[in-house]
Each structure stands twice: as C-alpha cells, then as structure tokens.
Image 1: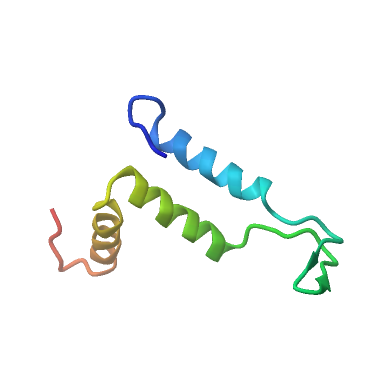
Image 2: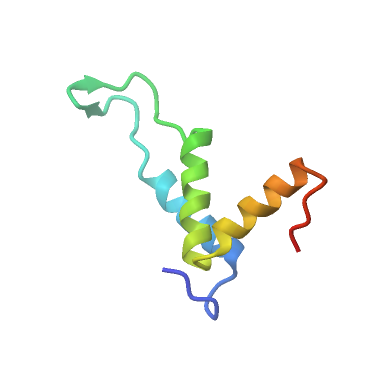
Length: 81
C-alpha cells in the first residue's frame, strides 16, 4: 500500500483520496433501492477516515502520535515531546 521509497506520504494520501473520489456514486445510481438525486460527495467524516487509513499505513504509531500532538495543542500545559 505505502512504500516510502516509491512515493512521499503526501503523494500516497492524494493517491488514496483520488481512489475514493473515483468510487463516489453518480446521480441516478440506485443504492439500497433508492435512486440518488445528486452526485455523492466526499464529506468531512469520509475525509477523516481517509486520513486515518493513510496515517496507519504510513506508520502504525503515527495516528496515536498525531492525536497526542493535537490534544497537547489544545492543552498548553501538556508536554508531548
């Protein structure tokens, strides 16, 4: 999936995101018996899932590390490095 020698983490993210975008359903598609009246879009939750998948693929501990940093930014009394 991710090979550090072949592409950068940013290129990997863009490739995975593009794959998801290419899989979005167009208007008129029947899904679970209901016809879509608009094109499916990539919502913020879906983008977050893509970020999580990519972080885990790049390095198994990267998601935990980024969460720790994010939480530390919100709590300036926390030392994280």
